[in-house]
Length: 195
Image (cartoon, rainbow, N blue to C red; front, side, top):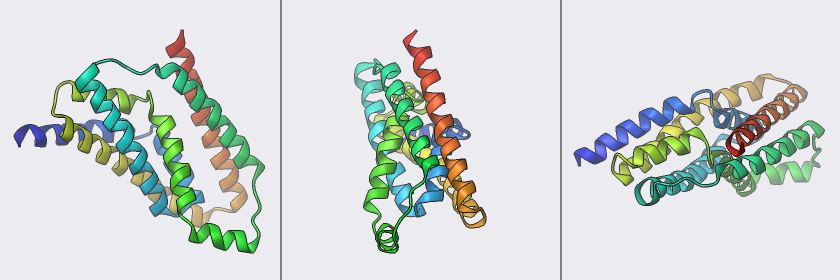
């Protein structure tokens, strides 16, 4: 039990701190301006749980890494696409708006996929792999997942507050810029990894 508590505490602390100011936190803030907070948190939790479970498996079982350069390249291009799409803007009919507000499934899926792609090869994934080589797998997985969700929840809170106080156009441009920054960040990381 002591090993579990140690793994939980260390993993939570390391991942929480590593996530502060990370592109994933910017993504959480961006998604929180577009969707309700609960679907964003659920999406982050789903993606983080899966990625960190894979990270722990790599750290414990294989000790090897995924070809993260190519994954980062694909994710970077996707985020640039998300940014352009956000800048272009969409308009909803009243019926579509009511349906979007009632339906959280599409928001959960969008956030889950975006976070899954962004986290593959990210420093929090690599940190989780490293922690899993030294500590118990379950405590490392749980601590790293909760640490990341907690850090991103801070960004969600900030995003929800900004979403109520800023005009829609400002939010659209800001969200587009954040997606663009995340995309460029991923592309630079991909080029660095592939060279």
